Image (cartoon, rainbow, N blue to C red):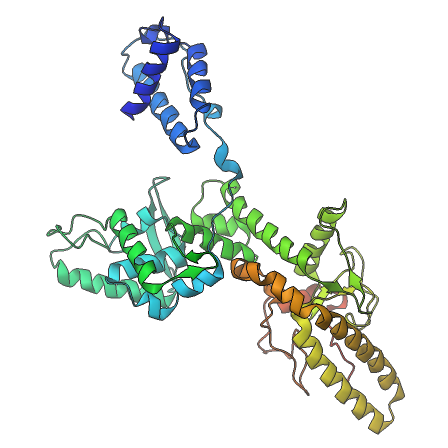
Length: 471
């Protein structure tokens, strides 16, 4: 219970309700006047919430201990009385430009003490709150029936035990820390990360304030920078980044909720909102052309903007192509045997230029082979593909440099939010090999989502090859 909160109530009563001299006169009407005055101040919502929480605890204690049985029954603080300013706040995730510097092995090795380095790894890879990470138990690693490691921790905010899967590298780091702890405190300690100083019996956990101080010095020594200069970050931003990365990889919200140990799905949905907003912004800014090289324009402020974006998200999830997107409504079945460059609803963007160039080279080789064999039908069909490729490449190359410049400011912040089905780094097709995105033979590398899409498409044909090969 915060005494300052009761002091503020007493000051309000003295100035605005002098008739209230005892809790017997503290009615709901008086409390509402106090809350209105409290919300009219410039104090942060978090501070006002703390005041109301302390006042509610005081009123509860008065009834529980029967300090004043005459206190009105309506003298209560309800849940709806608390500020709701945090509901619209978006996650403060870190850009991939910053994360690449933070996660670089050379920078991680700059930590002066192994405890700080291990806490940083746990925060980045597990998404824990910093207070939960510093108070991990010495036996915090457990295994399931298959031997997979999990980090066991206490969610102090919700006062319950929780688990999150970890990789073998982090498991080994924790094992090394346990060995250091056993050597330093042979009598045992309940913590994986005991306080280094003034802790002879190992009964004190690593201080959060100490970690924050070390973090500031470490960021300065590593010269971690973003577009605005030196980076100053809050350890809780790693939790936001952990969740945003998961959502950008299409991990279901229910799974992210469990990994973060959220109490409700509404808390997790904030990360879905920022992911969808950022990816949509990039999609709206990108130059999109159809198979004829004609620009496809979508007004982000138009009446169909939301519907177009929803249709695009469905296409990403169910009709992904290796070098563009399908613009066909999901309710319709594709009538084209070669569902790509000969399809009138195919749309592509500059990020697929490398795939288009490699595909053009392969198509030219196929035409040459078909010409030497006199296969006129194959020549005709691949000439249509080649013509569409030439128009696409010319149209996209005309805008490639301006598009790259326009996207430079957003590249760092949005790198982790690109959809996994349209990564710019996807390897291009090579002559004599299937283009990128071909599911390949059974037992090949492209499994998982590609195989799922192949099974789900009508006829089970999967993603068709983008060029017709001579027999």
